Image (cartoon, rainbow, N blue to C red; front, side):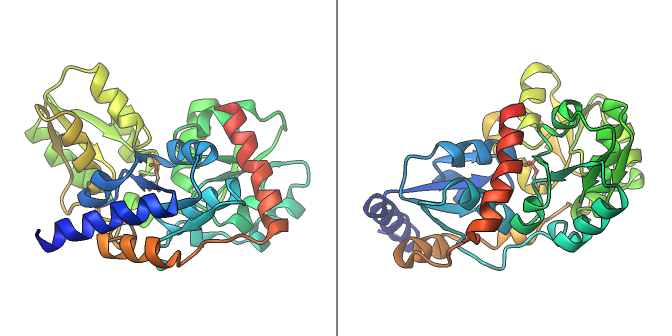
Length: 303
Ligand code: 13P
């Protein structure tokens, strides 16, 4: 047997022994997606994490995603094969930042994007993902809403709901780097291509898009449209699951390709080690977990 096959076999044996489930985000490297029991966007992964029937969750994604699984599964072991897999957007907001805004706007409800730490979620009233942010904001009854930490998603939600939001100034550097100047030549060269953008893109880039969707939402858009070419405005790892599901279609990305290095830190070797050692674990202090859970559960109830 080749080295790669031996490694894959070892992972399968360990997975059975540990009664583990492997969850992976749509941006993960192809070999990790092929190995996973479930691949999805943040919302799908949060939902799956809430339903898992396993003793161990191996989370192949970035830290805040594994933390969300740990918030929902206090009695299970959650491991993130590479602890340095972080999210620069999540790092833009702190619990103190949220408390300061609450003091300024005491009647406002706080809606926090899932790309945030558990400590920040614990200070928030609602969590949301790119897949349900519009629905969550529509469901909030408070007359003022603080939206953190992604300003681009915040502006998009504001436009879609007509609600005035107090928006935190964070952004995902990978999506924010996609500019109109990068998209225009691609759109001109492929005039029949449908443009699908992730809502973390800048407002002027979203203006160019025919459809705005979460990573998993993009599958639905491709499914219901009969184009042969699509321009995809999100992290380039998304090309793998799209091409796998729609082999007859062409998926184009702007140049330079948007790449999230954190998402690529997970390897098969690290998954094997995580299953063998049950480290590095992702844990959340119980008082923080309970408060963060409230925000996550409110989101799951809405949509
Ligand atoms: P999705 O929830 O759409 O997969 O987005 C996650 C993310 O972190 C995008 O940068």
